Structures are given as structure tokens and as C-alpha cells.
Image 1 (cartoon, rainbow, N blue to C red):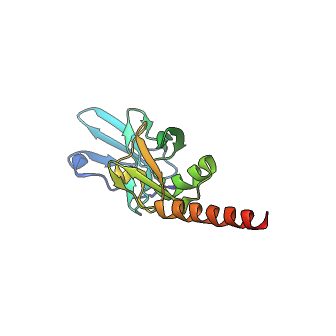
Image 2 (image 1 turned 135 degrees about the horizontal axis):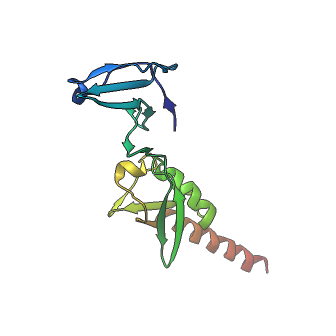
Image 3 (image 1 turned 120 degrees about the vertical axis):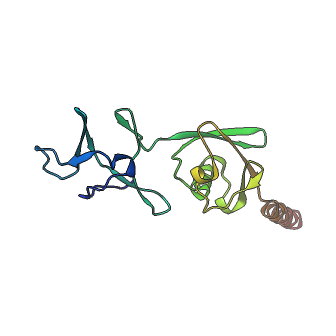
Length: 163
């Protein structure tokens, strides 16, 4: 994740009735002091770049900022399942790459379904609604499965001819 700090002192409209100014010990220009009726709040403005390219102010919960977290997604493939640790801002294509190391199926041979719909490789997990401990179904592409069966039948017929 890319965090960019700007020297802009613009604040949301909710702070429009407050008097704004820089703190005395501010060296970077990112600290803002808000004062109204003997109440003072010091805040540092932090920015983050979202995957879609949108630059937004970083959200705070209490004193801790929301960090880029890792979620666990359970991928079910037939009777087998795999728990994958992946970032919410990853794509289904990146998930297929991880699954290819675990299952031996190439990413182009995999079909991933979430909420009953097949997802494209370019779809972001968080944009589709994948959350921590959600299930994603993986199927082998039927066309590649048929090609593999046809190739194994051809190889078996060559073996019987040679022997």
C-alpha cells in the first residue's frame, strides 16, 4: 500500500465551524490543531491510494489506523479445501496463482465462484465482497479436463501399440 502525505490543510465540511491552524511544533505541515469552546484536538492528516486509483484520507478507529490486513479465505475444490491467507486488495487472478501452487492446476484451468457467480481474474476480492473466513468454490475447467483425458487416451493407445 502506498501512503502519501500532503501539506494541504483542507478539512471536511464538518470542521467548517471550527478554527483551524498549525501547531507550533509542526515541522512537516501535516498536523492540524482544531479548537472550539476550550476543546482542542490534534490530528495528523494521512492519505492512502486505493486500488482503483482514488486518493482518500486514511480512516481512523480510535487511536489506531486501519492497517492493510490479511484475511483467510477457504477455497473448496470438490471434497478438498484449502485455507489461503491473502490481502483483501488482491485479485482473483492472484488467488489462482496461490492455488496453482497448492493444487497443481494451472490458473487458466481454474474457475473460481463466489456468491454463485464465476469471477474474472481482474476482479478485486474486496470490491466483490469477499471477507475474512468466506468460502470460494474452485472447479477445474471442463474443456481442459476433456483435453487431459483425450491426451491420456492417446498416450495409452501409443503404449499399447508399442508393446
